[in-house]
Amino acid sequence: MSKVLMKGNEAVGAAAIKAGCKYFFGYPITPSSEIPEYMSKALPEAGGVFLQAESEVAAINMVYGAGGAGARCMTASSSPGISLKQEGITYAAGAEIPCVIVNMMRGGPGLGSIQPSQADYFQSTRGGGNGDYRTLCYAPASVQEIVDYVMLAFDKADYYRNPVLIAADGMIGQVMEAVEFKEPAPIDLPAKDWATTGTGEKRKPNVVNSLYLQADALQVHNKNLEKKYKLMEENEVLYEAFGLEDAEVVVVAYGTTSRIVKSAVKKAQEKGIKVGMIRPITIWPFPYEIFKKIGNNAKGILTVEMSAGQMIDDVKIGTEGRIPVYFNGTQGGVVPTPQNILEDIEKIAGGIR
Image (tube, rainbow, N blue to C red; front, top):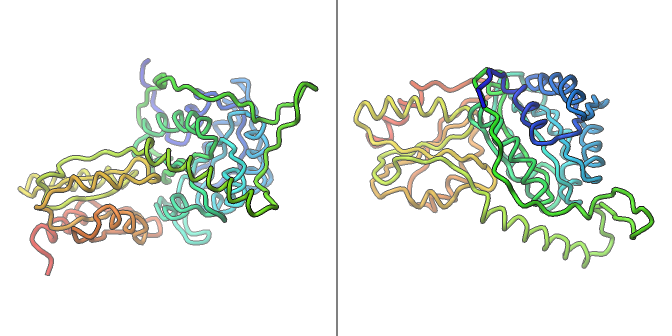
């Protein structure tokens, strides 16, 4: 299939429709507003339903209803809006409702700014709602990856009966790049015999619910959820990595920031510094195992994020204390520069005093 030039936010909608999404519920918020704008026209043309809800809270509960009936559905928002959806996300996780949730992150806390950010990492990987739950979370670094991982997210949501998050940032939502809509690899999906589709007077009604009044029953439910999350950790880790075995410095970054980091890594290598890189594609489950491939020559790991350092804890878990971890971060919508990252790489390679 030939490539087409698309803005990141519009690619989200096009990929969702290609993946069979039939229902979109959302509320506009910068820098994600082009997603509902695109879906408002394209989804009805594809035989689906677009509904602008009265709020983010209403939107996620509409997703709960449509997903509970077995439909492929999604919502999208940006940081403050995703915060409002947290109650519905934990309800969906507890009730095992498949759905896709896209977050085009912007600066915070609070209402913050409309510039790009990665400061929702904790919320995306640790869960912003109550209870012991997890959501598979992809962090695309290009518009093509938005297309690929949005399409994959719908399959994984159905496979695991679980919400799946796309954690991008406002920059990638606004940039335009050439993309190709490839046919996804076939996946054997379970039947949705649990969905509330009506009994036809032939069976007992299905109930989709996250409420368990008996503690023992809720514990059993949680243990079953844990088994599912364990399978995700075993089978769904994705990452990009290079140059780890002989690296003096290893840089860790995800999403749009990783593209800036690659420019800095190239400049460092041109100066004769041996630099490796790890780019988590799933930020949950996190690719801890790849850190074991870092050789003994490493003087330090540099974590680069558009946040106050929310990924550092995961990097430290991955290194198991073997290697010092340093941080280069920007906040509030400020985007890091290759030169600033290069300076930190040079400091680590030279031995920080």
